[in-house]
Image (tube, rainbow, N blue to C red; front, side):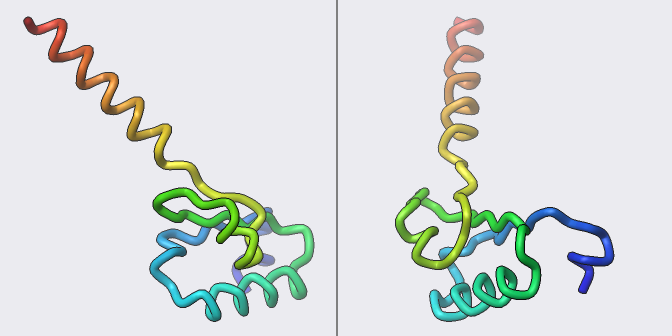
Length: 82
């Protein structure tokens, strides 16, 4: 498995909320069993820590902060052009 070959310390599941919950649970449980110590992060929108832990992830990837920064930069750009 490339996770061991490349010595990855973790894995991020993009669009985890679009995958069936039972599939996600099976994947995270098997990864934790076969590769203990790897950090599993879920990308879910909107962020929901409860669903992340129910599926066996260690953390959630937070997008809202990124979008907040983009919105603020656009607002500053508009103000500076007026």
